[in-house]
Length: 408
Image 1 (cartoon, rainbow, N blue to C red):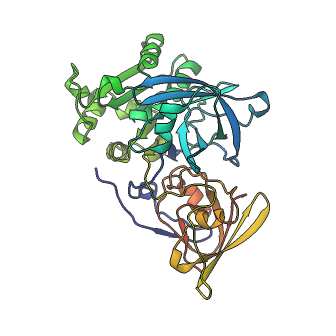
Image 2 (cartoon, helix red, strand yellow):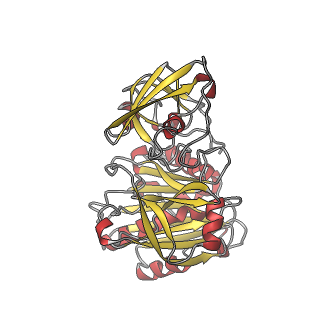
Image 3 (cartoon, one colour):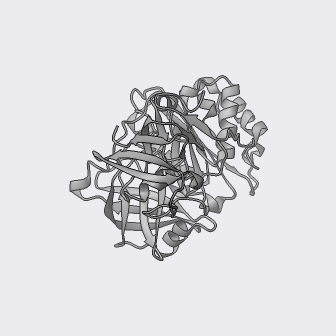
């Protein structure tokens, strides 16, 4: 299934920048090695102001040749700041070779006071993920943002519920925390996981998944699909395409037996699953999805954003924003076509952001005045768009003056 590229969408205060949930997906060109929620169903967690704190690495554990699990110690005084729901993520900030990098990773363990764990898979050409897999050691310190994300559930009234996860590669990370929590909190809840990889050696958390299956043999259905390794069952061999996924729904996971779906992986798989479930009349409110992407060179990096020079006499746009109760204004050249986030970073290095690719939602703000065109949106939900929220990393001013509020 090819990505649907809707191009840019124009937003005005209090209006929607997208017509329907199925129109939230743009081109799969977003950047940053991370996972983050895009649509959260009926129940979402209350958002809070994201802040970085320095945390110490307690353990680095090898998962595969190209992936590690990193556990951070969380001191008692920050324990409340780092409370989280399974499926949420944290952003990590580090300076490598004099350049600030920010990457977001899903939390892979069920909620535990005093620690937080993420899995980092090495991406081809990924500067941060390559460094972490090669150099990161216990005792190192990194700036870790407080948890965020809506790829989760309220996890209330789980008795008798059937939750299904479909994941590829490092998309397993948030589903590990979700599966553990769902199965532990109710003696009658069921969890089905379809997990696709190239081969057995690429499977992250292979032993943990086997142990979870041994612990809950009747309530956890685990289906490993390998694209480059032959399995006994033809249905579990080869790449997941539309025909194979439909067959799985017919014989393994009848949609009418499922209460909630969680999809996590590359755009193509997630979109295929969403389309297949929609064709099976599964209500969109019961389907949550999360995307992951790889490093590219066109992302905002560092505390100052992309350099922009305002020439004398050049036509500019006034961008005003409020953050932590303080208002700031920056002039942005019309010719630069820079995002609100990039402009804001030039005068306020503490403006919140993580992925800068339209996926994580960390840079979310409410559009108070003016018009903007939002290039990509994988993070904001329809109700947020209706209330005038925009992703400042993807929002380009289309009026002479734009005012946004990060504090709302």
